[in-house]
Image (cartoon, rainbow, N blue to C red):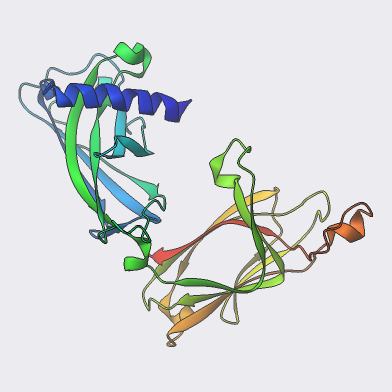
Length: 295
């Protein structure tokens, strides 16, 4: 429902922008810094928001929601919505205030590098402002910031990840409600990725899952080269892990190995005589992210 509401709001905003109806901004100045400076798809970016106020700022009598929309200007396609409440409610904003906070958002992979018309990047629009979430489609909107952003493909500067050995085929279930869990790969007892070495601090994010019904106390082990990064028994069937990988952990070679291991596996055909699935299944990996760390 949140995405649908955001998309509906986007088209209302787009209509008002096209007609030149920006509103008076209510004496609010907003600057938005996006890090890193070179932006690609399949990337977590840091959004630094800074609200300041002019002498004419009259205050706001409502608690507005901040809208953040990334969209394609050619076909008006919405790519990303990060509507949120600011850290200080807008009804409490005063002239002397400076409201500063940061958020991280994920830009999904959407560029088609194989498209004959692809020019190596795409320009998209970002719009940021305030809206009255309780006012429905007719609620008040205040556009505060707009910018054209150049997005390059992740291959432009992202370390290459090769799913080397111990991986079963990709599976999908588009009927699942949460898009974060619609695509996955099962490991075997040990699955290895070969990753290009950035030789800088990097962020590793893993969204995974285990079958608690079949293997209740299954252990998961992550290794960078031969060093154990973490080992744990997931408390729930699905888990999210984030790590900072130091350059010394990756070594000095052009590539390094990241391994996902488990102490227990199962074969569906062995557990269920009616199954023809003879794969060795360890854990499910829904999302694997490795990029230079953004502070």
